[in-house]
Length: 198
Ligand SMILES: Nc1ncnc2c1ncn2[C@@H]1O[C@H](COP(=O)(O)OP(=O)(O)OP(=O)(O)O)[C@@H](O)[C@H]1O
Ligand SMILES: Nc1ccn([C@@H]2O[C@H](COP(=O)(O)O)[C@@H](O)[C@H]2O)c(=O)n1
Image (cartoon, rainbow, N blue to C red; front, side):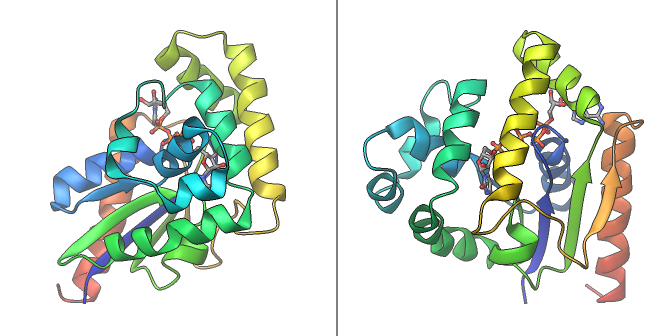
């Protein structure tokens, strides 16, 4: 049985940072599912057609990490047909042996409800905005508005809204360094691996 680690949470909470570090430490492949939606938004035209025809090359498009690409992603992510078109790819990725790590918004709730580890990563809005502003060289106030707009849209949509799975462990990284957040997540994974005697 593959060991799946599901990491969800609002924008810029540190999901990807933790997922990449766990991938290194435990040797599991990692899928940043936000990139799928960013690519669909960037392709343009009919979003459902873009999602159905998504190619791994599309994930390498320049500019996908920008705030504009994040907003476009959040808009197409609210379309049920777009989400449906991306489910199989994510589930196939999650079933790899010996395990896989996926981060996004609906991994623990919809894509991998049986995941062995579910983390829901949060941080104060202002902290997330400051971190993202530093990363992109942008204005923290503009980032704060951008993150809040995106989170509100992601949480309000009918299909697979942003929310913690009932059995997810909430990790608040507001007062944590990257190393501290990664250590907390890794400790949880180790505990679960030990309990399953893997
Ligand atoms: N605990 C932390 N302390 C300081 N900076 C952090 C911490 N965690 C993440 N960061 C930084 O915050 C920024 C956002 O982190 P990251 O990209 O991991 O978030 P994310 O949740 O994956 O974002 P997105 O939702 O946009 O995919 C990055 O610049 C990262 O280096
Ligand atoms: N599982 C997911 C992942 C992402 N989204 C949407 O994509 C946007 C961009 O995601 P990032 O993680 O790269 O910031 C995000 O705001 C969501 O709208 C999603 O719906 N489900």
